[in-house]
Length: 401
Image (cartoon, rainbow, N blue to C red):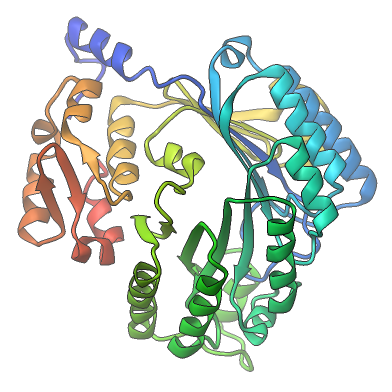
């Protein structure tokens, strides 16, 4: 383990030089507004009054304008509007924020610019506004093609509304569409999930994300299924059924031309999500909006999660939890984020970044995981095996100091 305090001067200079981070390549914008909060959701989102929405977008624009000048000097290769439901407010508000980012930052011509949206909050006119403003990627939250399952998780749309929204996105000219799916939903069976997969594949989106439901504390689902579970609600799938859902996701999507490039993400060749890939590769990113996180030159900070405080307009008061990552924390992130990618991590990149070989730091962990069949090495790359992917939480935990 490297301890920065005990590191020889030349080694510490090497670390500072190599691990200062890439230029601020990524920008994230948080839009916390929703028509209705889903029962499983623990994201920072809620329903707000119209005057709060208007004021929020004003303050969001001010925050972007007041960004550190050194951050504005670096090229931006991707912008991602997440939430909440960014497609819920008026399109004019969202497009105005994108235009402000383009004015303040050096956004590359080929930048990936994504917008999350939910069925029932989009139509072809709204989508054409997004396209004209410069958005070139749409991510639609379907979760399930079964209306009964959608009702059980508190979604405010039907599968038919999703189909209408998907076609509207195509009609508006979007050639890069992601569809979000979820497994292990209440009342979901392996058969119903396979039907969802096949229906989505027939639409031929460029990207599909398939995440397993995680029941987080503080959500309505936590009250239903933890502590003293309430009766009268559909049961969650058994662990073995959930495992089969995961396996069938890989099989069905592979059969239809999608390859898995990250544990839960599948894409047509060349259609990987550049923004999320940047997170897994620890590229610098700047977050704007309520509760958003930033990472720049191994310093991390978060905006306040209190709407009343965010609307005050004082940029210093908006930012909190500022943390300079230690060398150990940087190594941890390098490993457990990078190993989520099917390509794995570069052993040489680790050495270039930390001025130590990966064996010096993680030799025993790597040897153990390789012996257990969870990790494999090929040339310069270290990656999880199929077994390791199935047990990824266990395998990745080994790289935490």
